[in-house]
Length: 115
Length: 111
Image (cartoon, rainbow over all chains, first blue to last red; front, top):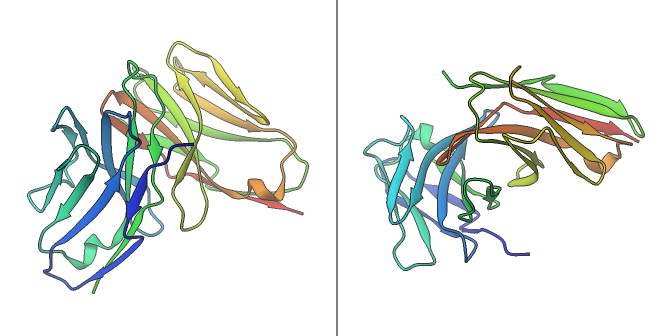
């Protein structure tokens, strides 16, 4: 069964550095998402992306964050000038275009640790 | 504000029991509702998707119901097994572009 794949599985970075989290969505999917989960807390929506532009974003997704679909298969989340509170599990997700009735499929996540 | 609440936060049952997990949501104007399973340190696995026009969906030992007017959904797990131990998350689509999660119910099925 097709899967959403995320790399790396674990990333450690120093405060103030930039990180790029990478995702390969399922190949025929058209809607792409990033979520995060701080340890012990809810899964939180960050951003959705469709037709090469942001569809919706949360208040968390400020100027520190950006997304890109650089080559038709990858979907990336860039976090500039990382802070300690950015430490979390980041999940990529995708779904197909079937009128809103298709389930969201998640990757296994990238655990980001900011030291 | 659109919010999803799950009760109980944690549940421990002996193997073989049938159990019900509850989910409630504000604002009944939903598109769909989706149930997920999350194992510790892992990603989210989609279990069931209920469209707003549906009342229930079944997959194996799992049955999810939806009552839009009262803002509730339940996930019924029949004949629970230790392998069912995980966190179960309820999530609501209020638009095509954003899925909002509850805090989850952490289930432990004791052998």
